[in-house]
Length: 176
Image (cartoon, rainbow, N blue to C red; front, side):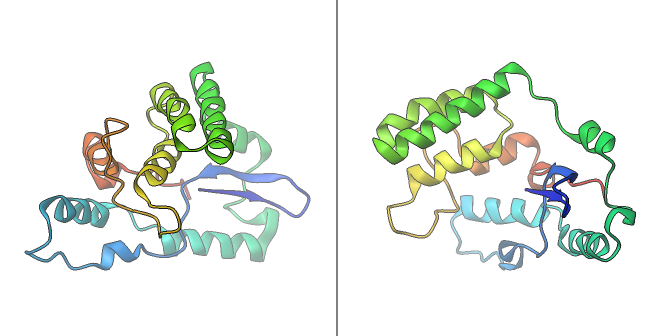
């Protein structure tokens, strides 16, 4: 996700999916001897839109042209593109942050009920899911477990991507 803010502190693009490079996962060759779920996950990753070059070009245009860039939005356009936040989503944000706090001060077990509540209140929010899944499945001090397979939350990254209709629906491509 990215938000563009100019040198005066004015937001010129609201939060949107952002990438400036292609995913390394999309380059992996799927081997016959890979576990079946890994094959499915890699297949879905390869379906995700690659916006890296276009997004990088938009940033470069904005840097070169400032407010005159066709990618810099007016304040009214920023507000129009910003997603509305119903009460349930605001409550989900509070639950997620409470879980973050409790994870830091009391540990994983204290955080889990709050993260489950955030998931239930805002099912479309991938940040809440991925953070909770990662902290559940990654041993302390280890690199992030990108597979994020856990029964604790009743779902997983792959299951949720498949429920969306596949990797091509995983992210909302920014309107450039």
